[in-house]
Image (cartoon, rainbow, N blue to C red; front, side):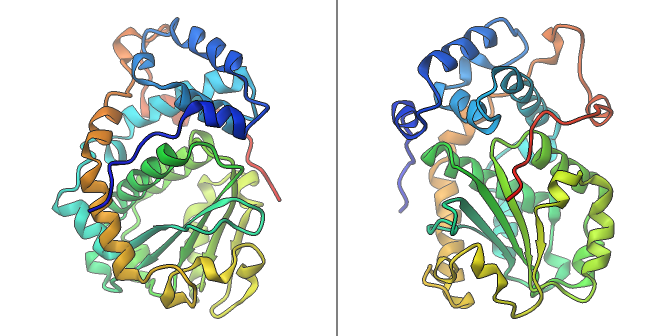
Length: 302
């Protein structure tokens, strides 16, 4: 039985990141207390430190991203509402492996590896898979605090055109918007492994929603290419990929148990939502957000 995870102590965060001071977080908290629509009473100092860090220690950018992050968690209900391990979510975790890797990348970043476990596209549900991935991600970050960088790897060796046909445009748009504008990470790379012959069609589908900064850190690796190991050591991967991590089934089962064991975390996380009724200046809608020009967060290019 996995443990109930404990939050990474903010004091250790200050030791880890000497450029984040308790005074910075105190000032961010004071601003938060003036924002009636934001869930300040449910946000810890670690939450604020994670925001501050991912915004390159800028107070002004942190305020904008903090507001946008929790606004999107409120409005993107497909991904962030009813975060429980029900049959749909469990099926998604049987269909797609979601594996935070224990070994950092060559540059010391944290990496998450995703791949299909079930090649039958009839069993693939993209929105629920994203929901499951964000649940795994949130627990991981809660346990570890800030990271110097984050890398996402999507292995496509089992992907078919049938899977691509099941990608709905609104979900893609929301996922990419959240990833680029409001996810509390310093994104350093998005890697597609074992690219299929129709990879150009996948890129055509997602390109309209990708800014240049993200486009510059997308890496497409051909089948059996070893180029990826320049970024992520081979030993980091699951056994089936030739690495020294656990096998697929063990990772899958442990992930499901971890989410089930930490239901209290998700109950508390569900309180971190925006109350649009009291937002200064009026309510925000999904349409308003997608109309916003420019970018709050800066993506890091290596």
